[in-house]
Amino acid sequence: MILSICPNPSVDIFVWVDAIQAGKVNRAKKEQHFPGGKGVHVALACAELGEKVTLMGFWGGPTGDWIRKECAGYGVQSAGVEVPGWSRTCQSFKSQNEFDETEILGVGPTVTGDHQHKLERMLEKLLPAASSVSMSGSWPEGASPDGYARLIRVCHQHGKPVYLDCSGEQLQLALQEKPFAVHLNTTEAGDIFGDMEPGKLASALGRHCSLAAVTAGTEGLFLSNGKQTVHGKVHIDQCFSAVGSGDCLVAGLMGASLKKFDLEDTARLGVACGAANCLRKDLGMLYKKDVDKLSGQVIITTL
Image (cartoon, rainbow, N blue to C red; front, side):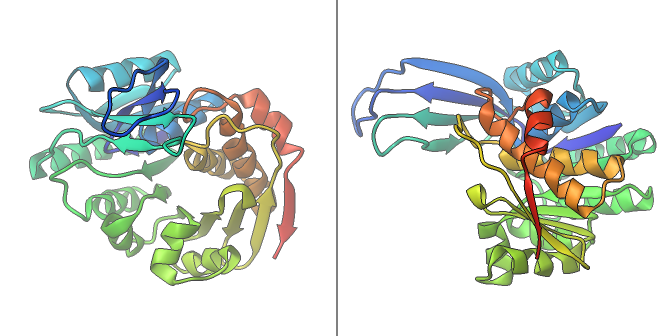
């Protein structure tokens, strides 16, 4: 079983507007709602790839209930801690002017130290049945900056590999605990290691983990195991939305490790999963049939 931890899940709302006009009433043409949050995307992608998944997080109010119900419809079980307030909502706008792709990320509930301790105790109960653990995204207001670091220590006590995808102070403190794998985009990695080309960023990140993944948008994935770095890239004709592509890539990396793929095949599956997300109109999701097709088209280069 894969355990995906998403401390700050959300309802993602995709809103279509002809052209947003500042300071005026704007009427949406269409909107769609999806379960969101980086760890939610990882869980949904893992489930589509055929893995058994449990999703952990803080759940607040009707929006939290809705996210859990939607994930259950895709075969993802949920666990975690119920907190006061509502889980956040995040809006992405599709417009025909400069506001296209504008995002508004909601705040969500506030958690306490007691809530964090409850999440840690629940993690300990679930870990014996877990093969690996992903930890992704931001934390709600009130959480301590070492939230992920504390969870990683719990996982290490049980000998479980952790796949980490976050930023800021949470990332800085979590890296000190040496997670098994880390995924960052070039901006996040550059904030830590300075202005380098992506391959060198992957090598630098590899000093803090066993598997370092740095993504550079359409330029693909740079993956390092500390001894070797490879670059993976695939071309797609149309991209509906790249939201969640990095999370789907993490799901691919986890699936590849479970299958004991080598570095090149791990990169191939990760890239295919990230690109497959772009082909699906649902935010942060993929179809396995697209992954299977794209896997054969990924170009791998050893750096």
